[in-house]
Image (cartoon, rainbow, N blue to C red; front, side, top):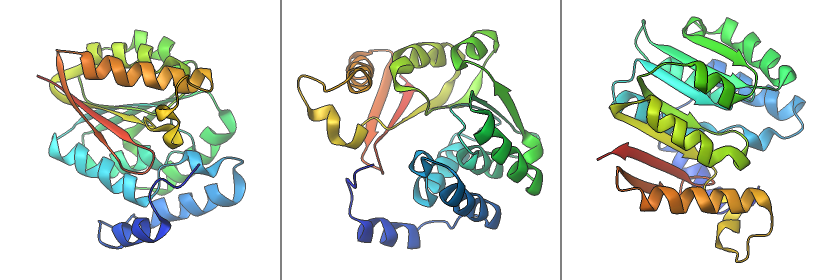
Length: 213
Protein backbone atom coordinates (compact mmCIF):
# COMPACT_ATOMS: atom_id res chain seq x y z
CA UNK A 1 0.00 0.00 0.00
CA UNK A 2 1.26 3.44 -0.87
CA UNK A 3 1.48 6.03 1.88
CA UNK A 4 -1.11 8.69 1.05
CA UNK A 5 -0.45 10.30 4.42
CA UNK A 6 3.07 10.54 5.79
CA UNK A 7 4.16 8.02 8.39
CA UNK A 8 4.98 10.85 10.78
CA UNK A 9 1.46 12.29 10.57
CA UNK A 10 -0.05 8.81 10.94
CA UNK A 11 2.03 8.19 14.06
CA UNK A 12 1.08 11.59 15.49
CA UNK A 13 -2.61 10.94 14.86
CA UNK A 14 -2.40 7.52 16.51
CA UNK A 15 -0.68 9.02 19.54
CA UNK A 16 -3.51 11.52 19.95
CA UNK A 17 -6.38 9.06 19.45
CA UNK A 18 -7.91 6.35 21.63
CA UNK A 19 -5.35 3.55 22.09
CA UNK A 20 -5.90 0.03 20.85
CA UNK A 21 -6.58 -2.72 23.38
CA UNK A 22 -3.83 -5.15 24.36
CA UNK A 23 -5.60 -7.96 22.50
CA UNK A 24 -5.85 -5.87 19.34
CA UNK A 25 -2.20 -4.91 19.64
CA UNK A 26 -1.13 -8.55 19.96
CA UNK A 27 -3.31 -9.52 17.01
CA UNK A 28 -1.87 -6.71 14.89
CA UNK A 29 1.68 -7.77 15.72
CA UNK A 30 1.08 -11.45 14.94
CA UNK A 31 -0.68 -10.54 11.70
CA UNK A 32 2.39 -8.53 10.73
CA UNK A 33 4.68 -11.46 11.46
CA UNK A 34 2.64 -14.29 9.99
CA UNK A 35 0.39 -13.10 7.17
CA UNK A 36 1.43 -12.46 3.57
CA UNK A 37 -0.49 -9.19 3.23
CA UNK A 38 -0.66 -7.62 6.70
CA UNK A 39 -1.47 -4.22 5.15
CA UNK A 40 -4.99 -5.55 4.55
CA UNK A 41 -5.66 -5.10 8.28
CA UNK A 42 -6.98 -1.79 9.52
CA UNK A 43 -4.44 -0.21 11.86
CA UNK A 44 -4.86 1.42 15.26
CA UNK A 45 -6.01 4.78 13.88
CA UNK A 46 -8.72 3.39 11.62
CA UNK A 47 -9.65 0.93 14.35
CA UNK A 48 -10.23 3.84 16.73
CA UNK A 49 -12.34 5.53 14.03
CA UNK A 50 -14.48 2.40 13.57
CA UNK A 51 -15.06 2.12 17.31
CA UNK A 52 -16.04 5.78 17.49
CA UNK A 53 -18.53 5.38 14.63
CA UNK A 54 -20.12 2.37 16.33
CA UNK A 55 -20.45 4.33 19.55
CA UNK A 56 -21.86 7.43 17.82
CA UNK A 57 -24.72 5.46 16.23
CA UNK A 58 -25.20 3.48 19.48
CA UNK A 59 -24.78 0.31 17.47
CA UNK A 60 -26.00 -3.03 18.80
CA UNK A 61 -25.81 -5.00 15.55
CA UNK A 62 -22.79 -4.69 13.25
CA UNK A 63 -22.24 -6.45 9.93
CA UNK A 64 -18.71 -6.69 8.57
CA UNK A 65 -17.95 -7.75 5.00
CA UNK A 66 -14.32 -8.92 4.97
CA UNK A 67 -12.82 -10.01 8.29
CA UNK A 68 -9.18 -10.89 7.43
CA UNK A 69 -7.54 -11.65 10.82
CA UNK A 70 -10.30 -10.04 12.85
CA UNK A 71 -8.78 -6.73 14.00
CA UNK A 72 -11.72 -4.58 12.91
CA UNK A 73 -14.26 -7.11 14.18
CA UNK A 74 -12.62 -6.95 17.62
CA UNK A 75 -12.65 -3.15 17.49
CA UNK A 76 -16.38 -3.18 16.83
CA UNK A 77 -17.04 -5.79 19.52
CA UNK A 78 -15.16 -3.70 22.08
CA UNK A 79 -17.38 -0.72 21.25
CA UNK A 80 -20.70 -2.56 21.58
CA UNK A 81 -22.80 -3.07 24.70
CA UNK A 82 -22.84 -6.47 26.39
CA UNK A 83 -25.77 -7.65 24.28
CA UNK A 84 -24.30 -6.34 21.02
CA UNK A 85 -23.36 -8.58 18.11
CA UNK A 86 -20.88 -8.50 15.24
CA UNK A 87 -21.55 -10.72 12.23
CA UNK A 88 -18.40 -10.92 10.14
CA UNK A 89 -17.88 -12.60 6.77
CA UNK A 90 -14.81 -14.06 5.08
CA UNK A 91 -13.58 -16.88 2.85
CA UNK A 92 -9.95 -17.21 4.02
CA UNK A 93 -9.76 -20.14 6.45
CA UNK A 94 -6.16 -19.42 7.51
CA UNK A 95 -6.94 -15.81 8.39
CA UNK A 96 -10.13 -16.88 10.14
CA UNK A 97 -8.22 -19.38 12.29
CA UNK A 98 -5.95 -16.59 13.51
CA UNK A 99 -8.95 -14.35 14.13
CA UNK A 100 -10.75 -16.99 16.19
CA UNK A 101 -7.73 -17.46 18.47
CA UNK A 102 -7.79 -13.79 19.37
CA UNK A 103 -11.56 -13.64 19.67
CA UNK A 104 -11.22 -16.39 22.27
CA UNK A 105 -8.66 -14.29 24.18
CA UNK A 106 -10.93 -11.25 24.39
CA UNK A 107 -13.87 -10.86 26.78
CA UNK A 108 -15.67 -9.27 23.81
CA UNK A 109 -15.04 -12.16 21.44
CA UNK A 110 -18.31 -13.82 22.43
CA UNK A 111 -20.15 -11.02 20.62
CA UNK A 112 -18.64 -12.06 17.27
CA UNK A 113 -20.13 -14.60 14.87
CA UNK A 114 -17.99 -15.65 11.91
CA UNK A 115 -19.76 -16.57 8.67
CA UNK A 116 -17.52 -18.34 6.19
CA UNK A 117 -18.34 -18.33 2.48
CA UNK A 118 -18.97 -15.79 -0.28
CA UNK A 119 -20.18 -12.62 1.42
CA UNK A 120 -22.95 -11.92 -1.08
CA UNK A 121 -24.48 -15.32 -0.35
CA UNK A 122 -24.32 -14.60 3.38
CA UNK A 123 -25.78 -11.13 2.93
CA UNK A 124 -28.73 -12.55 1.01
CA UNK A 125 -29.49 -14.85 3.97
CA UNK A 126 -29.22 -12.17 6.64
CA UNK A 127 -32.08 -10.06 7.91
CA UNK A 128 -31.68 -6.50 9.10
CA UNK A 129 -31.68 -4.04 10.45
CA UNK A 130 -28.00 -3.61 11.24
CA UNK A 131 -26.91 -0.38 12.87
CA UNK A 132 -23.56 -0.34 11.08
CA UNK A 133 -22.26 -2.16 8.00
CA UNK A 134 -18.53 -2.15 7.26
CA UNK A 135 -17.45 -3.16 3.74
CA UNK A 136 -13.82 -4.19 3.31
CA UNK A 137 -13.72 -7.24 1.03
CA UNK A 138 -13.12 -8.00 -2.66
CA UNK A 139 -13.32 -4.75 -4.57
CA UNK A 140 -14.97 -6.17 -7.69
CA UNK A 141 -18.18 -6.67 -5.68
CA UNK A 142 -18.20 -3.29 -3.95
CA UNK A 143 -21.29 -2.06 -5.82
CA UNK A 144 -23.13 -5.30 -5.04
CA UNK A 145 -22.15 -5.12 -1.39
CA UNK A 146 -23.28 -1.50 -1.19
CA UNK A 147 -26.69 -2.22 -2.70
CA UNK A 148 -27.34 -5.11 -0.33
CA UNK A 149 -26.01 -3.11 2.62
CA UNK A 150 -28.57 -0.38 1.91
CA UNK A 151 -31.30 -2.98 2.30
CA UNK A 152 -29.85 -4.27 5.58
CA UNK A 153 -28.85 -1.06 7.38
CA UNK A 154 -31.26 0.64 9.77
CA UNK A 155 -32.84 3.97 8.85
CA UNK A 156 -30.48 5.84 11.19
CA UNK A 157 -27.49 3.53 10.75
CA UNK A 158 -24.31 3.99 8.74
CA UNK A 159 -22.44 2.14 6.01
CA UNK A 160 -18.64 2.41 6.08
CA UNK A 161 -16.68 1.41 2.98
CA UNK A 162 -12.90 0.99 3.15
CA UNK A 163 -10.14 1.47 0.55
CA UNK A 164 -12.14 3.89 -1.60
CA UNK A 165 -9.01 5.85 -2.58
CA UNK A 166 -7.20 2.65 -3.57
CA UNK A 167 -3.65 3.97 -3.16
CA UNK A 168 -4.65 7.05 -5.18
CA UNK A 169 -5.38 4.97 -8.28
CA UNK A 170 -8.98 6.26 -8.31
CA UNK A 171 -7.55 9.38 -9.96
CA UNK A 172 -6.33 7.45 -12.99
CA UNK A 173 -8.24 7.55 -16.28
CA UNK A 174 -8.66 5.10 -17.79
CA UNK A 175 -8.56 2.88 -14.69
CA UNK A 176 -5.52 0.57 -14.73
CA UNK A 177 -7.43 -2.57 -13.68
CA UNK A 178 -10.83 -4.03 -12.81
CA UNK A 179 -10.50 -3.37 -9.08
CA UNK A 180 -9.80 0.32 -9.62
CA UNK A 181 -12.70 0.55 -12.06
CA UNK A 182 -15.02 -1.11 -9.54
CA UNK A 183 -14.06 1.34 -6.79
CA UNK A 184 -14.49 4.30 -9.14
CA UNK A 185 -17.96 3.00 -10.04
CA UNK A 186 -18.84 2.62 -6.36
CA UNK A 187 -17.69 6.15 -5.55
CA UNK A 188 -19.72 7.59 -8.46
CA UNK A 189 -22.78 5.56 -7.46
CA UNK A 190 -22.71 6.74 -3.84
CA UNK A 191 -22.10 10.38 -4.84
CA UNK A 192 -25.12 10.27 -7.18
CA UNK A 193 -27.41 8.36 -4.80
CA UNK A 194 -30.11 10.81 -3.71
CA UNK A 195 -31.26 8.44 -0.96
CA UNK A 196 -28.07 8.89 1.04
CA UNK A 197 -25.66 11.48 2.33
CA UNK A 198 -21.96 10.60 2.21
CA UNK A 199 -18.51 11.92 2.98
CA UNK A 200 -15.27 10.40 1.72
CA UNK A 201 -12.82 10.65 4.60
CA UNK A 202 -9.12 10.73 3.69
CA UNK A 203 -8.23 8.35 6.52
CA UNK A 204 -5.58 5.78 5.60
CA UNK A 205 -6.72 4.45 2.18
CA UNK A 206 -10.03 6.33 2.22
CA UNK A 207 -13.27 5.53 4.05
CA UNK A 208 -16.73 6.37 2.72
CA UNK A 209 -19.21 7.19 5.46
CA UNK A 210 -22.79 6.80 4.20
CA UNK A 211 -26.14 7.35 5.87
CA UNK A 212 -29.70 7.67 4.66
CA UNK A 213 -31.11 11.16 4.20
